[in-house]
Length: 243
Image: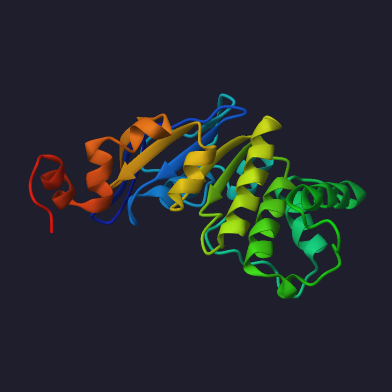
């Protein structure tokens, strides 16, 4: 990829290269403002990279519009789920099938119902989206992405704001998706849960990829600790007295 993106004089991404394979979960962590969501926005066509390329199955995606990229197989969720509140759960999921998956009519409805069943919302598809809890809205966001038929799924803080039981439920769902061969990249701040599911973890800081590897090894790296805890962490590691 070697993707770079700036906003005026601020560098949001600097030559970031990442990839995720079928049946793999890639965790993406880093402090706020490190470029994580900007990376997803570039991959999905919401932002255009200043440099670098985004490819899916060898096809160059640069310059394509978001719905075109989605139709080619990249689905995503957003940090804050915003369903169409006046529409039913089924109709919300059908948006993904219609516009992201390019399905029509009965095929779109079937794709939406399948996705809702996958995420545990298939019992009452006629429910208004406005009646859903936060955890259910997160699941609906997932269903809308899944209804588009992605081969790669980008999850942006899908666990944020959930209690322990709700987090575990989403974790189990993500593991099921991975076992079905889906490639998953997750931005997440709920680190204990991320460490349960991730095959590899990438760490961004200041728009730069500073670490990439197995979860247990990456979190021990000094640069990673400092990116979260600041210079005092290094001082303590070297034998200084923290207070």
